[in-house]
Length: 254
Image (cartoon, rainbow, N blue to C red; front, side, top):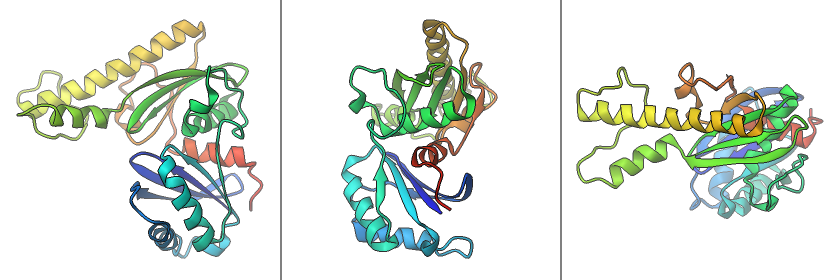
C-alpha cells in the first residue's frame, strides 16, 4: 500500500491507498517544532488500527509547503515506518508548468492540478481553501498555466481580531443573514460574504481571461463552507491532493 502525505501550514493529512482506493485518512496538526521522533511516534499511533498496519505500507510520497519540516518527516518515515519517501517538486510532478519560475510554485498546487486534470481532461480551475486560498488554471492540454493566491478565510478572520482593539475572535461560518444584528453576526457576515465575493470574483475573471468555460474543482479545509453558495464552484473533492499524490507516484503500490 502507498502512504500519501500532504504537509500544509495548518495540518498534515495522510492517506493510505490500495491501488486506486483510498482506504484510510488521518490528520495531524502541523508543528515545525516537533522532532522526527515525535512525528514518528504520532505516525505509529495513527497506523496501529485494525484496518491499517504500518507493515502494510510499501512506499510514501509527500507534498510539503513547510520546508523546515521536510527533514523531520523524511527521518520519521524512514526510522519508524521503514519508508523512503519521494517529495514532489516541479521537476517530478509530471505536469507541464507555464509559469515564469516553476520552482516557486507550491507542490500542493501542482499535485491538485494533476489530480483534477487526470479526472476531467478539460480546462479547469482548482480552488484550494486552506490557510491561503489558491486558484490555479489548467489548460485543455493539461498544462499548469498559473493562478492567484489570496488570504484564506480563517486567516482573514484571525487578522480582523488581531489587528483591531475591540473585535473578538470568531470562527468562519455561514451566517443566517447578511445584516448582522450584533458584533459577532456582523463579523461572520463580513468574513463569509467578503470571502465568497473574492472567490467568485477571481473565478469569473480567470475564466474570462482564459477565454474558456472551465469547471471549478474545490478542495481544502474550508471548501465545504462554500458548498451551495458559490456561483462558480462545480464540485468539491476533500481528498484531491491525496489522489494527486497517488497519481504522480504511479498508482502501482498494492
